[in-house]
View 1 (cartoon, rainbow over the protein chains, first blue to last red):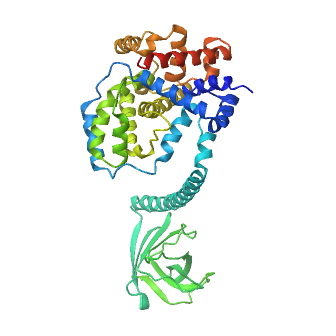
View 2: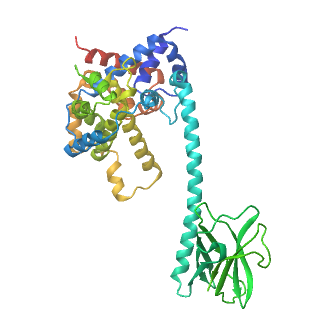
View 3: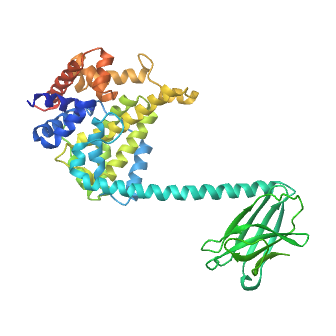
Length: 256
Length: 182
């Protein structure tokens, strides 16, 4: 196959207009052909000089100053931007979105692979953070909504016994349920969990199970009581992991 | 057009902040009309200019003289941003009814353009591209300024694909003659 067709492809590639099979074919050819690489360089240089031959226009002075200042503050040229030059020349030719430069890939395959892996790891971490942030936001929003209601009560819980330094606050609304916020509680031993009880007419009712994070803080959302009886007294005990119908373990937090 | 571009880029790559201002002062006034011609909006062009030159500072170490000249390096980076911006404006125009303030900002120029654009067209005519034939200038404009592919150009001009390719090749050969000092 003669080389002449590639000269034409090189010209169209240089103006960034090559597409389809022609593009794939040329990109496969380019890494192997010094003649085309030289032709491409010369074509791009000629184009650039032509584009830069228009009468100059001064950029806004503040923009210049801002940039010069920013460079003055910056840490210095980033040696890891190796991709930028490669991307700039390849993307110009690949009209569609997507980085298809075989020529670039041949030279930088290993680095590309590493970057892709790093990016994937970062994305995963971020997705995890985002999900947990969303959850927390929903929780806090719920608590704020309850606080708008004049019927909502805020009840303080005090640490007891071995957890004397612990504290808790219950935002409670008979119709809307509640939010418990605790601090200063140690993580439960293996096989154990904290259990919340509402005490109505002297009888403890289970109001769910929860844990604390490494800093000793925890939050717990309680669904509205089905009985409609007003809950005024709350307590937290330590129970076996599966929960129990009535409190068996020591009380660590209690309201007055 | 003899320029100290290569030396300045090398200096920036070595972390020499003092090289940036002369680099900017040399090239930014030449890149701005180019970007403006693509995006046809002053605010967008100013943003693109800012981004481009910030990235030339950060990416100076990636410049490889064996792959191209400093002029090609800068123009390629500026063009990529400008074409991206142009395409995103086009996409928004096609799929949404743009809100009032957006409609004026990114809209394609009215036929004949406003006074500033007409002045720029005159400037273009005075530049190297003026040395091309009408047909050659047209394909370069469609490909390089408007970001159309060879297929799209052929459709737009109602010409066979082969004709478009050949015209581009001839246009580039002519440009090389024009910009190369005798």
